[in-house]
Amino acid sequence: MGGTVASIVLGAVFLLAGGSKIAAGPAWPRQAVELGAPRAVAMVVPWWELGLGALLVAQVARRPVAVAALATLIAFTAMIALRLSQGRRPPCACFGAWSAKPIGIGHIARNAAFAAIAVVVIVLG
Image (cartoon, rainbow, N blue to C red; front, side, top):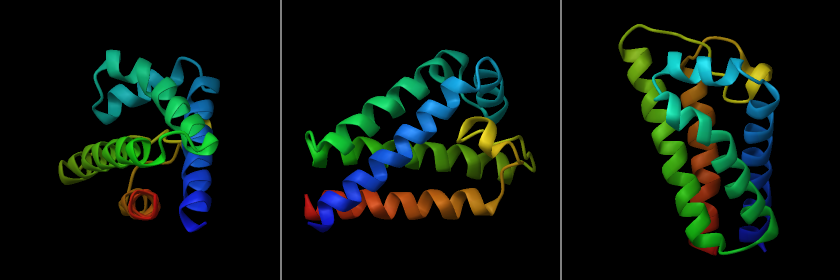
């Protein structure tokens, strides 16, 4: 039961993140590039997040999808940590226009919490 709830919660986060990036229009890819993502990757990220979120909510292949979600969160967190270590604080835009404030340690903590939820899905299946 716990794995099901964790999967739905994590899926909802990814659906919200992907949907909000698409809704942000051309602002999202620009902000992603400022954060350090290659433009080609930035164009795919919202659709990747929507796919992961839909599969997690629908309970399709929970463990492998949670592993992909965890890898995604680790990559995002590493990019944020790298920018912070360089003294750069571009806007995160992690949730489109809803998260336009500059990146900070709170973004790393938030991603760590989401990663913990992904681990729960992986462990509990």
